[in-house]
Image (tube, rainbow, N blue to C red):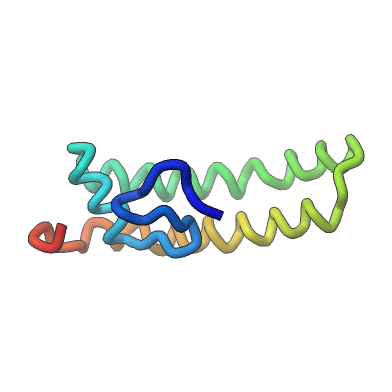
Length: 96
């Protein structure tokens, strides 16, 4: 339910927003463009990898409804990450 380490000041993976990612970039001295690009790429890679992984887990006896639930959660969080990624660049630095 919560992240082991905060993104910015946020420990809730379901409410991560552009401000959180921009704050993390500043705190870690990372270029916000890098954070934005990596966030989108990470979401894309997860969405690409999930179908194969889900099928493999299903073949090994994983509970299909659980896999479907995980897939739905991943799809929602990855969609949010992809929408958030360009917004990281629009967070004014004076707000961080």
